[in-house]
Every structure is written in structure tokens, then in C-alpha cells.
Length: 360
Ligand SMILES: Nc1nc2c(c(=O)[nH]1)N[C@H]1C(S)=C(S)[C@@H](COP(=O)(O)O)O[C@H]1N2
Ligand SMILES: [Mo]
Image 1: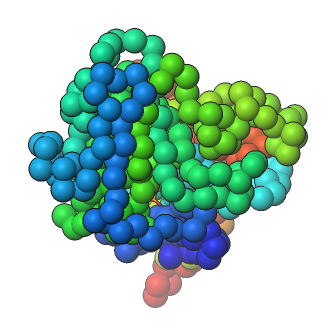
Image 2: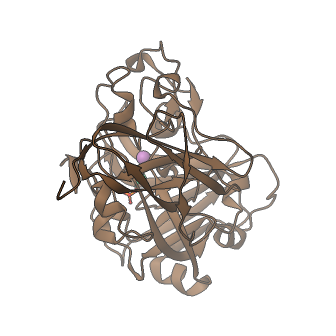
């Protein structure tokens, strides 16, 4: 793992490791934290469900596991800061980790559906324009003022069957660093909404007023001073946008001339599919279709691969993904740059050295 920070712990796998499998092993799954990882006594843990519901609940872990049907969802989590490193050539982003393309991973999550828990709490009007607020106990000193982590999703998303209160990951009990005993999994939304160590769910008329919803995880205007940003500034992030990354070869890597294997991943926005990924070795003059691996579920990335016949020399590889609305990624990171460095979905590029073929 490439560790960006020890405290709070922030780390991502290397591209090679991430590219090894469609399902990311737990020990290769990125970890994104805003404060210390809490130690929670699973016997004492309670989940409160309150707000605009008829019958507020207080559930123990045993209650949650016994009163609700367990469901499995194979889903990708991706941090809004994934690929931020690609913004740094445009302009510096102080105070934020320079994530490469590894702030993303795919796991088999299992737990109760959020919609089932809301129904048990007697959610009155599931069609109303409401928000589901998530609270956690980990206190972040990075927030202004320092506060426990929280965020929210619209009720319309919370009602969807893919949104889980998960206590299992890849067939094992959810690890502490990934939110044990229970975390939210909100597929196709920025990772910040998949609140770990959740202890309270509240249905309310407004989005969370937590720092990490109201002030952070927003696209500020390029000219804005992030230190002056306050609640409501910029564009609040929820669903993510079409994105892709080249995993191999790696930047500055050397490969022998001939057939060079190029691999990576692509993710589509919710309710869309990645239908084409192209790779170019001549700055987009010509493109080669990559083969798409099987996608385990509509809520995951797709891995892709192709071989390019490359002569010796320095080459820049470029990739771009298309979804089933005919949309493809923006070309330039400069066109997306924002002061907190969220949502870099520009064409990924890798500069490589193609050596003489062995034996020539
Ligand atoms: N309680 C809590 N939940 C949290 C966070 C956090 O710091 N505290 N980080 C969020 C962010 S920004 C991301 S990208 C994901 C990362 O989940 P992971 O560490 O399991 O990969 O958790 C989200 N949930
Ligand atoms: Mo994140």
C-alpha cells in the first residue's frame, strides 16, 4: 500500500495490485479516514433510527442481524478525491492527499437494506423530498469546527435496494478500519456518503449540516479560496461521474517493444453502463478498443485490457471510457480542476519508455 498519512490513516494500493482482480481483496482495499479509527464494543453498540419516522428504533447488532433479511451487493466504492494527483500539474492542492488511481475498490458487501430498516421505523412518506442523515463517532480535527463524521443521502437514493447497512465484506466480518461493526454502502455515490461506524440514522427535511456534507466534498469555483469556504458553497457531490484509469503500464514504467499490455478500470454513473474503453498511443489521433472484462454487478467498475504494438521510444498512453448515453470523459484535467481537488475524471495518461525488443 502507498500510505499517504498514518494519522488519520489514509492509504491506497499500487496500480499493479489493484489491477490483479475485479474483486479487491480486503488487504488491497483503500482506506480513507478523517479522524482516528474508533474502537467500538460490538455488544454495547446501538443504531438509533429517528427523525421523521413513526416509530424510532434503537437496534443492537443482534437486533439488526436477526430482524432484517441479509442481502449481498457487489459494489465499488470510490473516493471523491480519487485521481487527485492528476490535478497537481495544473495547480497545487495544499492540505489534501495526492491520491493516485487507487482510492477505489470493489467488494462483496452484505447486510440489511437501508430501505428495510427505514420501513421498520415506520417511514411515513417515502416519496417526499427528504434526506437520510448518517452519524458516526469518529471526531475529525480537520473539520471546522472539529466534529464527529457525518453526511447524508437523499431519501430517493436511500430507498433503493442497493444501499446497505453492511456488516460483512468479502465474506468476512467487516474489518474495523472499514467501519465495524456496521457501515453504510451507497453504491455509485462518492465514498464520503458510505459512512463507517454508523450509530445514528435520522430522516430529515435538509441534507446533513455536518462539515463533510455542508462545507467539504463540494466543487468550489476554481478561483475560490478553500480556507474561506463555508456551508453551502460550491456544488455538493453525490452520484459520481464517468471515470477511468490506466493501471498498467505504470507511469515512467519501461516495457519491451512489441505487444504492450495496457489494462485499467472504468466506472459509470448510477444507472449507466461503461460500453466502450479506448486507448491511444498517439495523443488521440488513433484509438484502439479495449476488451471489457465481465462486470460482476451494475454497481461495480469494469476492468479492461488491450495490447498495443509499440515501437521503441517514449510514449504517452491515453485512455477514455464511454457510457451508454454516448458520453465520454473530459479530455483535460485543467477543465475540471477545483480548489479541493475532487472529481478528476479526465482522460488518464501514462508516460512510458518502450525499450528495444529483447534480442535485437
Ligand atoms: N465515519 C466515517 N465514515 C467515513 C469516512 C470517515 O472518515 N469517517 N470516510 C469516508 C470517505 S471520504 C470514504 S472515500 C470512504 C472510504 O471507505 P474505506 O476506508 O472503507 O475505503 O469512507 C467514508 N466513510
Ligand atoms: Mo472519500
